[in-house]
Length: 155
Image (tube, rainbow, N blue to C red; front, side, top):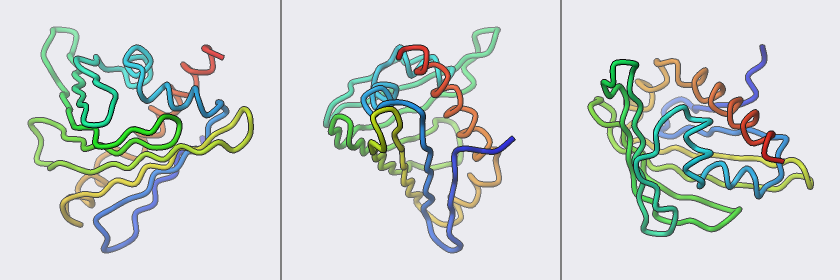
């Protein structure tokens, strides 16, 4: 099965580019990234906090069937321009990975299609390469597939 989400990691750089075109209007794609109820559905995680504005913050948490926290992430929102851009930090707790900077850019392609491009900047090339050794590419593609499915039902 083709991966619709493309991840480009140039050798020797501490960043990567994630690009995905969605069969969704721009306003719905953006909403899927700022509405906590929709985020929970496509990310499969609980949104503990989401203050979706400039200088806001967020916190996500996922637990297993026994209630043990298996994933927690948080960050600060540095800029949020509706239907255009989100600049935020992202940090996974209890992992060796440091804080990363994410620049999300939203683009309308047609009335019913849009593109999301995410530039992720890591603290070092080694850290970025360590993330890429995980099933990161597969995971982001699966998450974006769920985003497409969940939000398509909102049309």
